[in-house]
Amino acid sequence: MRCHLKIEVSLKPGHSDPEGETTAHLLRELGYNVVAVNVSKVYYVVLEVKTEEEARNKAEEMCKRLLANPTKDNYTIVIEETK
Amino acid sequence: MRCHLKIEVSLKPGHSDPEGETTAHLLRELGYNVVAVNVSKVYYVVLEVKTEEEARNKAEEMCKRLLANPTKDNYTIVIEETK
Image 1 (cartoon, rainbow over the protein chains, first blue to last red):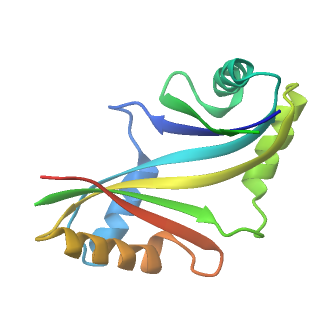
Image 2 (tube, one colour):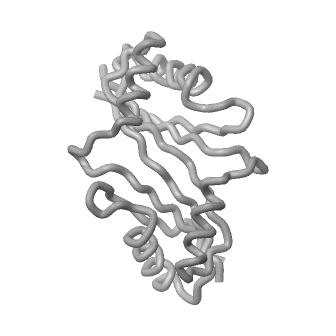
């Protein structure tokens, strides 16, 4: 079956977010009253698996092996659809 | 008041997503049965405004002027919190 996963990878609190800071700076230059910007990335992954449990386990593995940096990133995994 | 906005910027359907394709390729090399990967970006913006309506209008403007490329990107704006 095909499992549609939404995996969001964001920086752990306290880690500097240069992309967010640059975006905040540019938005302020455009005249917006921006207090802060944080940026995260979302991976929409379609995975061929046998069970939802397998999908969740594989997604955890993928985060640890490739998508997230365990030192500085948090991640959340949501199963959006299975068919 | 401070308005917490979540702005997700993703590619319009049909536009090529090199980052997603590379990620899919790497995940397949690691042994996962990946059908497809699409990547999008989320901006968490804290904005100082007078009303929620102003926040929504400013967020629309920010997308058009800086965060999204109208030719190839879709965006969604969600007001997560106001205080």
